[in-house]
Length: 296
Image (tube, rainbow, N blue to C red; front, top):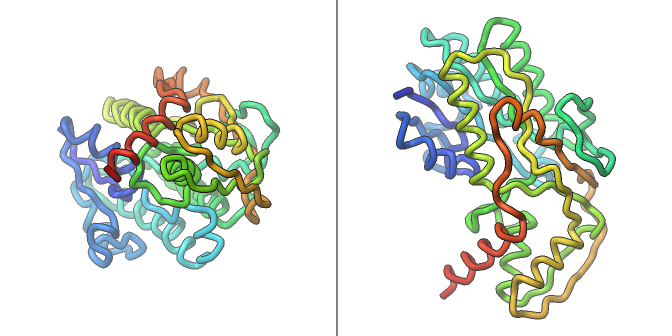
């Protein structure tokens, strides 16, 4: 049984990952939602203390929404860049020399053509969040050059938990579907690759297993379905999932938002045997049912 630190353990991916890992490993759950001061990894000393004697570190903690990052750029840089620096530094100073999994994002690619793109696509981030994640990846490569065993995982549009941020599109649409409320559609042509959190966490567990078996120098891997869904199509799924008539209010795309990302899942399948298992319609219907049960 390994001792693994999980930063951002109270977030969407963190909660599911802790659930899947806890039966087989000793976990150190790190999140400012647990203790704002004692778990603040933007403090180098705290980062070292929390990850001491660990065999591995899964670094998920970040300001994770584009709109929030645009509004609070300094906080975003402190969390996403300085925090990553401190985690990598803690790993390299540790006598255990733990491996590190770094959570990055599809936002590093910026806008791409409407086709499945690979992990080798150049990074052209559009916004502060994407730039912070690209900067974090740069530090990961620096740590790798210095001998650290690191892996970069890029997540697409992850969903599947009603306790996610309420303004993210699938929680917002599924809640509106339940309530019969209007759906705010930020440009119906925006295209996203929606990946269920249970599937994503399974992929991360597969990476953990590889690293525990001594695998080194994994290339970046993104978890994606290979299928794009426009916000217009998602709105129609929302209406179909409810017994209500929902008004659609289309507005202009938010500033600095990516217009399209569809990821090629071939590398995840080749290296990890990973494929997504949850169709979007199924996952969305489960979200609607969960919101219905929570309000009953």
